[in-house]
Length: 53
Image (cartoon, rainbow, N blue to C red; front, side):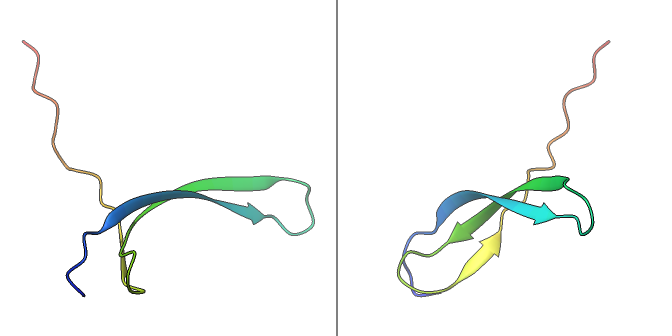
């Protein structure tokens, strides 16, 4: 939004399941602006692999 180049940041989110000792780890990728608080979720490309004969 401010004109600065966005940077891709990868972080890991850990969620605890109530009543159990199990945890769920999720990798989160976001585009973040280093100068302001603007961010967007990273979207994987939807390129499909070529068909094999």
